[in-house]
Length: 381
Image 1 (cartoon, rainbow, N blue to C red):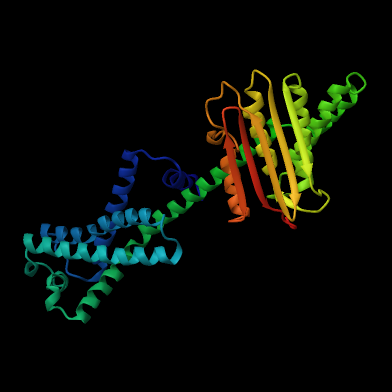
Image 2: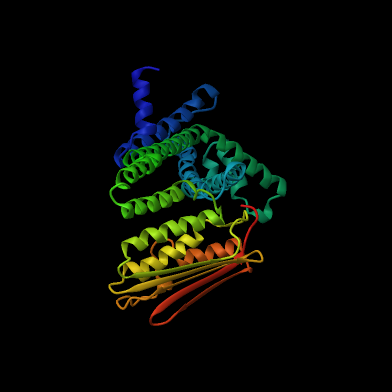
């Protein structure tokens, strides 16, 4: 393919066109379309009379394809969002036949009113009489013949419709590739901007080894941080998690945060029941409630605060209750807070995993906020 052909394809299919350019391209195409079909008569042996009446009648005859084409493209642009494949093709073809029939009737009505069908060539007289005959006076076979004629006329639009569909398809493919490229670009930028998970853990472990001889307290804090990071990075990829793993992560989190606020924070943790069984709970269910308690009961507190945690497992059920003190400067209810993954998420997950077989109780007063959940333990993830 030479450079001129390649440049035309790029301009028509891929390059953004302004309205003036688009109008010129379309006008040139339709003028060539009408002219080429008029030239057909030179070799067909039909009688040619280059009179204004002959030129206008045949010019209008072929010009009627123009509105049919653009209306069909408009209909396609609307229907492509609702239908696909064969359903879309059938609907477009049926609507094109109806549009062609309407344009044929309109054409012969116009020619009849301007020139009179009897003054035109025999094909115009024949088809004009059939199209303008009232439906009540037409036989079903005659109506079917006209519709078949409308259908055969559509074949003249195969070229422009083929070009338009090719352009639609190429542009859609380009948009898809651009979206994929943007996604890969964003993912690459994210990977470049974030340290690898194992690097974070190794760095914390290295800091722990260096600090332990100097400060046992700081070393314990880093040990808890390592446990929380390991849980967040490697244990939260599935919907369900072993109960003892989430409970251990919760303990690391609570111990770590307790060291930050030990001068004004009192924490009580009680666990009742066997934790050795391989039972599963929804991932982050307990952690979310614990983070919520610290967020509202500790982080916002200026004075002494407290958190009480109770976990009970018995007869295949789990009961988890967590209470926190309420700060004087917190006017909004914890239940109404929509930031992050909150109580609304807990409700949805309980309904999803334990439909009609769970409890979520929330109670609060001026000094405390309590959440209690109960659901069946699962033997499989």
